[in-house]
Amino acid sequence: MNESDLSLIDRIVLGNCVEGMRTLPGDCIPLTVTSPPYDHVRAYGGHTFDDETFRSVAQELHRITMPGGVVAWVVADGIGDHSESCTSARQKLFFREVGFKVYHTMIMARSGSRWPARVRYGDSLEYAFILSKGRPRTVNLLRDKPNRQAGLVYTDAPRPLAQRERPLPSVKGRPISALGVRSAVWTYPAGGRTTTRDRYAFDHPALMPERMAEDHILSWSNPGDLLFDPFCGAATTCKMALLNHRRYLGFEINPQYHQIALRRMRDAHAEYRRRLDTDLLGA
Image 1 (spheres, one colour):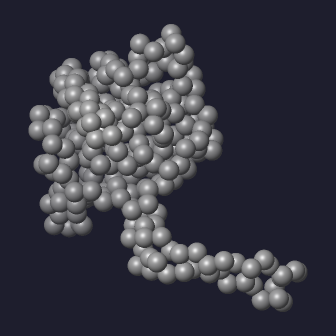
Image 2 (image 1 turned 90 degrees about the vertical axis):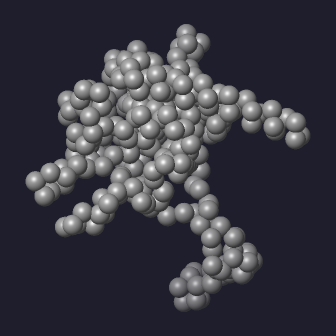
């Protein structure tokens, strides 16, 4: 954003996100992380999110996302009449229609969040569609998967002479690192203090686990980048952006949830200052 748009940085704005996005310049957002309402699974203060609204959101998201920018769209399907709605699949295809590339499809699994149904396995999965406007400008793959062969030396086996035109240079062995890149299935404990320690935030009916928001922010952005959330809710994404040295902007249409978001960000700013003071004193 240019200097005339700085008044929107580090703010949670009360209002309709489509109208709000229309006030933003094009190609200005490097990363969006959001989880919109879907399939009337929960009531959000009487505000609906129908197919027409989704299409407007998708079109505006493409307009404001900068080249190389990423949208992490976390969504699931409702179940009615013994069948999944397939809303997520239709949304994924429409994002392609407006110009996004579907860079990656990931699974967000929440353990301990719901009782299993009598006729199906536990309903605890969400999709995270990683949408990019061209080639992603930032990809920081998280390396926290323990390698069972850590410390061993890996050597590339050269191809037989019959399979190559000229000899390959000698390959030096390299040790296998202790941690490797995690899979595309991320699992988080859900509920209570495992989602957040901000108890008052549970007045919002559908909190994203803080670790989930943080992992997407770390994966698709760098310190100093702007994080955007058009469905800000209780400001989980904005809080984790701040605590990881990013700027933030969120829109929230529900006044009650907007007040929760403002309180949460006040607490987050206090926590951020405490961390900075601790770092300075320990330096």
